[in-house]
Amino acid sequence: MAKRSNWTVAEMFAETLIESDIKGKRTLIRFQDNTMTYEEIDRASNQLAHCLHTLGYGYGSVVPLMMNNCHEYMIVWLALTKIGAITALVNTESSNMSLLHCLKTALVKSSGARPLSIIMGHEYRERFTPEIQSKLVKDFRDVAYYVFSKGDQERGNLNSLAAIHPATALSPRLRSQVKINDDVFIVYINTSGTNGLPQAVRISHLDVIISGYIFKTLNGFKDYSQNWFKMIMDDDKKELLNDIYQ
Figure 1 (cartoon, rainbow, N blue to C red):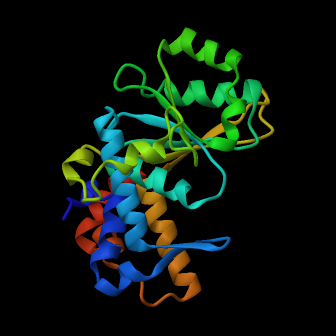
Figure 2: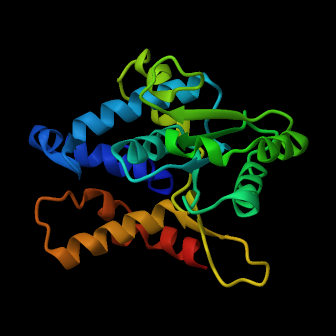
């Protein structure tokens, strides 16, 4: 069990899985004609997390993600969360200068600490033009591009890279430095800001956990584990919450 100050979305997901064997068999995502259970998402994200950890990513990494709605979308950000990294969610409408702005402001947050990379759905490869890539190289020297694609032989294909890794759970020590009020997501949204560029909204692990509890309560879900929420809301943890919201 993680310390209360180190409770993250990854711990929340693990808690949901271990509450019963039945939970793992239930559908977590239903998209178009395909479904994936809790266990399937867990195993797939474990494989990708092992892969990304082997490549050098972990605590301190901020990885831009540009992908359509699909099962892999959750698999990617959950995998990054399991190794203590932050996912920068890039609006799929972004292109040219707005896309470059999102990528640069995300990558600069992990520059020098870890390898730099961008993960994208295969349908967005053409957005990363030679001009954008050259400007990123100028500022960051070396940036890896990883693609989710059906073509197993394509260079940088995360599907095939992750497939050779085990689906076993990762050690919580990989995210031991992550605190509950640390970012889990950086979301880039289009606003009417003065510069006309997407603005970054930071979302912490605590934000996600509390939002999940509110969603659960408002919708009357009864089979959802509340243990993870009690980890931060019990009386003996009021001091932690006071520290977070000061």
